[in-house]
Length: 140
Image (cartoon, rainbow, N blue to C red; front, side):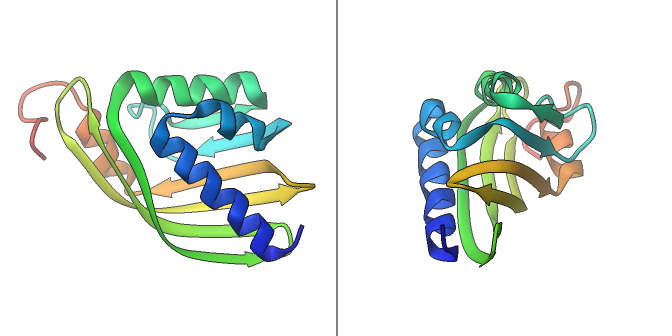
C-alpha cells in the first residue's frame, strides 16, 4: 500500500471508532498486532496489549468507562509503513461525568493493509483526572 492508502485505512478506523464499529477496527488490525496506550494505570484503557482478543478488550473497556468517544484528527503524516495522526480525543468519563478533551498523537505501523502496531499518546494526567473517583473529580 502507498502512503495515501495507509492514511485512508487510518481514517476508516477513526470513523469506525466514532460509530462504535469495533468489528471494522478489528478487521483492519493484524492478528498479532501490538496496541499500546501510554498513561498511568488509573486510566482503565491504558497499557500494552497484543493480538485481536486483547485489542477487543481495549475497546470494550473504553465503551464501558466512557461515552461519546471521538477522535478528531487534524494532521496525517505518512511515510512507508508509518502513519502519524494528530488531533483531539473527546469523551465523557462514565463514573465521574467529567469531560475528556485532550490532544492526541497516534503512531501506526501498517503492513500489507493491516495495522500491526498502534501507540497512543495524550495528556494522560488530564485523562486520569477525568476518570478519578472522589471529591472534585466531575467537571474538570
